[in-house]
Image 1 (cartoon, rainbow, N blue to C red):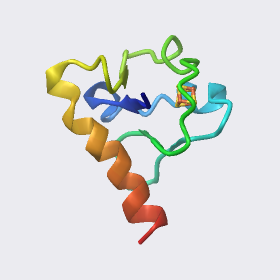
Image 2 (image 1 turned 180 degrees about the vertical axis):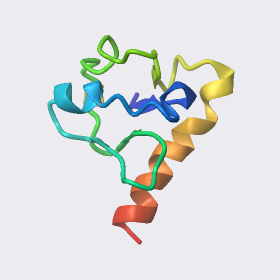
Image 3 (image 1 turned 45 degrees about the horizontal axis):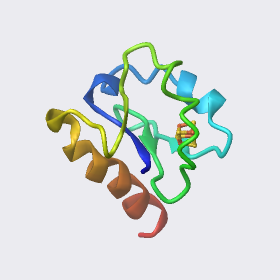
Image 4 (image 1 turned 30 degrees about the vertical axis):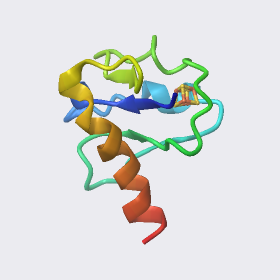
Length: 84
Ligand code: SF4
């Protein structure tokens, strides 16, 4: 199941995850408050999990309930930006 980035990333945008992702599927924009994982491209390698300083990355089959809405938030970023 794809990984996604949740609320702890908001306002942090550390970007450590971006540099370790082997398929370059983590992106943001200047006007965005966090990073997002592309669910179509993520290969579930898990490399991003240990490098996040705020534990903002989750898998969608093992996410805390309060983070589940970010599954859609991540997917929507790619729908809106790249499929518009
Ligand atoms: Fe990238 Fe792997 Fe993290 Fe998916 S699990 S976002 S492929 S580093």
